[in-house]
Image 1 (cartoon, rainbow, N blue to C red):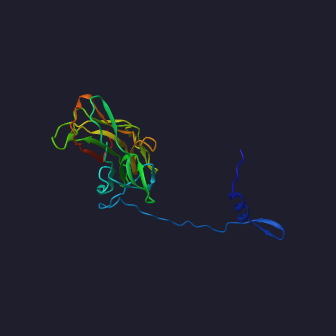
Image 2: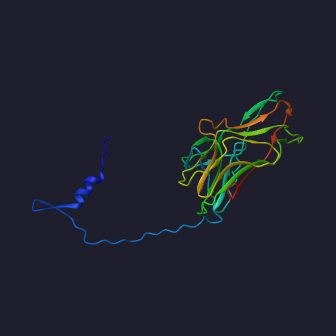
Image 3: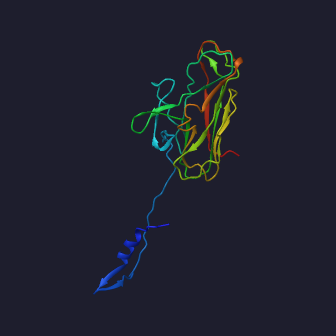
Amino acid sequence: MKKIKLATIGTIIALTTIVGGNTVSAATVGDRQTDAVVTFKPKGGGSVTPPVDPTDPSNPLTPVDPIDPSKPIDPGTTGPLTLDFASVFNFGEQEINTVDKVYTAKAQPGKDHTGADVEVPNYAQISDTRGTEAGWTLTVKQDTPFTSKKESKELTGAEIHFKNAIAKSVSSSATPSTVSSSVSIIGDGNSQLLMSAKVQEGAGTWIYSIGDDATKASSVELKVPAGANPVEDTYETKLTWVLEDVPNP
């Protein structure tokens, strides 16, 4: 294999001089070492880390609410360990059916770093700027079943399902040991583990991306069984995303 070392030529020129037609090696007459110093501290308590693009975490992203585009996105939590963003899921308008059905959430809309409209995978984002690599855990739970707005009827047996989930980051810290590629969520208030970083893992900004660019519109599903018997109405529920400052045992 041919190897080209560009530094070789410069080294020869720097270390040699020509005296009277003879080549003489330069001699070191002294040396000295000096210091360069930088001190880091945890991020301030009032600081918010903005969302980034889950397909390219080196670029910022301005997410848009997929249900109400005029509604501003809630800012993330503050401090040195933060939950920066979590997607809202919009499963659209569907016909009433009497058979098992699976509906997919729309991809996360937003504007990229150039201001162009884009769609990216639904995702959650955390940032660990504590400077300790002490570990953390991200979970999600559905607080209550899907319930109709007018008559408060439950969508019996409905289940949210994540698939194709991956961890994304530009951080040089080790990838979190636990990344749940598939998760099922029902409205019983029980937490489901999404990502967990052990000690010496997960520093910097990390994304739980539900799918990639190819699967962004098919990786969040709502499974509605035949016996759910929905009424003509809009059904809603809430998801609670929780970031804890300890790794999952």
